[in-house]
Each structure stands twice: as structure tokens, then as C-alpha cells.
Length: 420
Image (cartoon, rainbow, N blue to C red; front, side, top):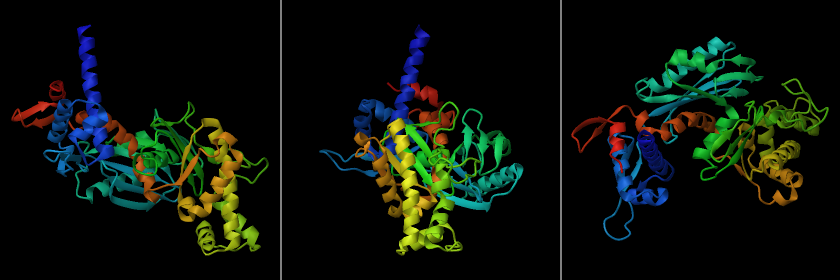
């Protein structure tokens, strides 16, 4: 019984550390008093924990806040480069890697064309990851790097880190986590790219402060990531969010997946271009593809605008089906097509959703544009590694941290034991 009670107390202390560093991450710069008010912890507990975080160089003091009477409080913020993480996006045409700080800032980025074979993709990714770290002047070491997040299209098994299926990459049961970890010597966190999009917007973008959201990406493909109460929902088969292959038009146009009438086939990039050419009556119009169509729509081309409205109509129908099913009330829309087209695509999506969703939900669903642009995929890919770090920051900071009061070094568990 005594060991159980001791274990419970230790767990509570670790949870308190997590609460404090999370408050700093989400509200920085913030004072110790502000942390106590947000977390409900006593001021003495907050002071003790912040001292541990300062000793581990995870947090820094930065200036003074406004006084409520008496001395102005010292503000705290994360040390953004105390630990680093690499985000990777494996897309149909290219591989991108970025070195990212604890605060979600991209410090360095590199891009290379996507090779054809899995072994070559692994080699390219390994090279890019090492380059973005070394060229930024940091040591390539597990002591500094929390890991590598990898976003890729298709269904990913979060337990094994394998790509179960990706028709864009032509992958089937590829153990991408194992292959990359063997090369890099770091923890690797593969994730579906739409889930990376949702995580990035939830942590750092348009979804900050929301409890749940649906992140939708529109481009070559159409995907979605669903966050419920702060957690990605993947489903028991790990395919939740593959809305691009929701059949919305029986006997509709063919899709890359081999079926017909998928949302992606009637509203993705290829469909947008096809609609515009059809309405214009010129099969060779818009030679630059979707980018040309959107540029023309911005320049008031009625055929291009009609094509975006048609795609938006189908996307809104698909999203209405999701809202009716999972009852989400907050949708963030991004991806290459949505980012370029902006309200020219978002407006018809909103209008379609309101017509097709349950009437009682129509006025309660918000659809907003993504805030992070093209970098959201890279930033979101790192969130799984960052979540692990922020759950146990002192453990991740190493087994030893300097304690000023002791004038020497003690293990973080021993230091934490002194917190009341």
C-alpha cells in the first residue's frame, strides 16, 4: 500500500510538471502567478516546478509583466531550441524536411524530388534530415533531437509505424518507421498527412484553443484529420479521415483508387481543371492546371469561378455527411487548392454544407481557412514527438539537471521528489 501511495504521489507531481510547462507553451510569456491561476496549483508548487524547468534550460525568464500592485512579475517562456524536432512531408512529387523548434518555428528547410523506389526515398529522407540539422549549426544527436515526424498520404498504422496503403505513393505495407529509424538512430513518428495538417492547425494555427476540430485538405487529393478532445481519431482500422474516397456520386468519374464517384474524383485538382475546360469549351485551356484555373478565377474568369463553385458544392456535401455523423462544429480547410483559392472555394463549401447538413446544425458549424499555409504539414508532423516530450519534459531533458540550491547535479526524479 505504501509503495502504491508513493507511486500515486509521484504521478501527481509529474502531472503537475506537465500542467506547468503546458501553461507556459500555450500562454507564453506568462508569470508564475498566471501559471498558478491557470493550473490551480499553489504558488509554491509552481515556483518549485519552474525552477526545475529553468535548471534544465527548458524555460527562460524574459522581461517583466504588468504589475497588479507591488513588484512587476517576471515572465517565463520556453527555450525554443532546448530541444529540436524534424518534420518531414513525403508527397507525390517531392520530399521536404524542416528543423523545427519547441515553439513550432521552422529553423531550416530542404526539398528534393521524390525518388521512385522505397529504398531511395529512405536514403533521400535520411540525407535531408541530417542536412537540415547540420546546416543550421546543431549537433545531430538524440540528446538534442526529440525525433522525426513523417507525414505521408494514405493509411498509417500508428502501432507499427507502417504505411498500410498509399495509392499516391504506390505503397503497400511499407515499414517506413523501422526503415528510417535504422538509418537515423532517432525515434520516427509516421502519420497520415491530413492528420498532420489537423494537428498543426490545432496546436499552432486556426484551431488553437479549440477542444475538437475537423481539418480538411483540398489539392491533388482530399483528406481530413479529426481531433476529438485533443486526440487524433484514427478508428480501429486507422483510416478515419479518408474522405477523399467517400463515394458522393454513384457511377461518377473514375478515381485513382480504382473506384468511381469518390469525392476526390469530383472535387480534387483534376476535377477543378476538367470543369473549367468543360465550361469554357476548350479542352486545352488552363495548361498550368489548377493553379491556372484559380488565377483565372481571381481575375474574374466566369468559367474558372464556376469550376471552383462546382468543386465546393461537392466538398460541402461530403463535409455535411461528416458533420451529421460525428457532430463536429469546427472545420479548418486548407491544402494547396484551398489556400490558393481562398474564399472563392470556401464560400461554396459553406453554402453547400448548410444546405445538406441537419437543419438544427446548419448555423452552428464554423468553417475557417487554415492559418499556417504550406508549412502546416511539416509543423504538424512534429506534434506527436512534441506531445511525448511535453508529457514528461524533465525526463526528456536528460537524467541529470543542475540544481542551483544544491550547487551540484542531481537526477530529475530526485529533484521532482522535493516538489510539494
